[in-house]
Length: 385
Length: 246
Image 1: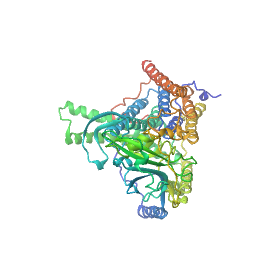
Image 2: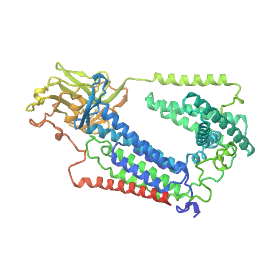
Image 3: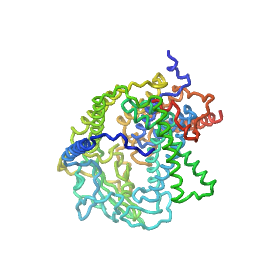
Image 4: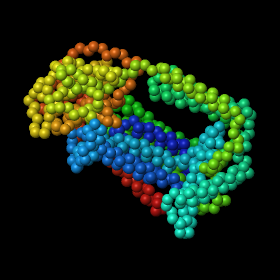
């Protein structure tokens, strides 16, 4: 057995596997407003993130997304219970002092707050919150930057551009902080439009300088060369990808607008096939090697598979017994869909099946990039897609 | 990030752009012609006025029924402009019939509610509709139509729409149906009246799909899931703290 098949060998897991796992869980959460499976998905993602996150700066994304989702729930409850007249049910919790509003608006300010409205807002908010946390888990576990290394060859240039943008975005913040600090030391005021102008110019200038530096560095390393630059193949790629994407758009429109059977699925499938062909043809012309490619080994299969299995269990269960997933009344005790719960618990597998992240060795974490423009070019690892 | 310098603009952008615009336009116009009469399978909502059904122009939450009025709901496929009437004449059941033996206190009102779950043909997914029933709601005078209905039935509400009454239909909300057939002239059926003294008739509904929430044994799965959530959450916190200290 090759070493990368062992789940105990410390290495970063393929980010695609994490994204498949998280998106599958989000899809499962999108199928129900029953708080039982939703809370379980939340707990599972939180546990796996706690067990397998790295020390990289983006690994803190989960907590940020968790806070955001709490905010979503609270805002929803406030709006529905305090402002919506229509959402109230018969079980009155409290009656607040109210401000009269025109009856036709359907709005109210204060007044009766009912248990039904609060519960309904909580459950609907919980669904959105769970989906948000799944995205947060994917961000925390699989770096978007590493994922961009796996864009197909035809989209290579776009991938490189995205990687560079992602690398430089934090640097802009650092730059802005540095310039503001300089202004403060000189005793200039730091508010108002004038200050913004004085801030924007040096930041933009620094960014431009750095991108010219980076372009020169990449040029020197051989980026931008095309191995097969025949006009016909390039044109074929462009036509295929563009027509395919257009067909995908029309197909999705056809599916959503229910405008004739022929406009929906067939056009969508044709578009996807065209895009796939275009990406394949375009990928042939770039003969680039990958720098330290992420393997797709047994742990990747296990992680992605556990997520897909959980989603499949929820989808099947929704089909078999839909009453367990849509509460007939918000005040009901939520039922426990056994198959879905078992499936979601399977999604805990990555907490042990994914290899532990490699321990930081020697090199300090790159959370604070150097501020001098000349040293700002990203490391080879980030750009080598 | 940096201002894009147009140093390698392709030469013949004009004709290509025109071609693209023409292509998109042609496809969109094709899509536009393919519309047909669409119907919606949902809970039609009526007020009973002068012995006739009046298709509501607002949702139940936007209307405050008067004391002694009757509201009617019918599940089925309708065009959305006419509505699908309950399978009984509007004058058959009056408040006096529905609310016999029920009295309203001060600051309260009595509103009769007719709920017709429709026929098997109306059902979206092979679910058997319960028998139609009538119920008497005794609510505060200011209560709107949705609160009246909430008093006598279990409501599934999504995005401010009433999607299910007493768990029927189990899932889905306002299904759009292409080329909706005209509603057949249905036979009149009897509505089950509430027991004389009870003010809510929700116990008579066919709750086959609903969980028996009273049984102590049935709560165990819920306790198990709650325990799992607590263990996972606590374990996650513990792991995170240990990693931070390490």
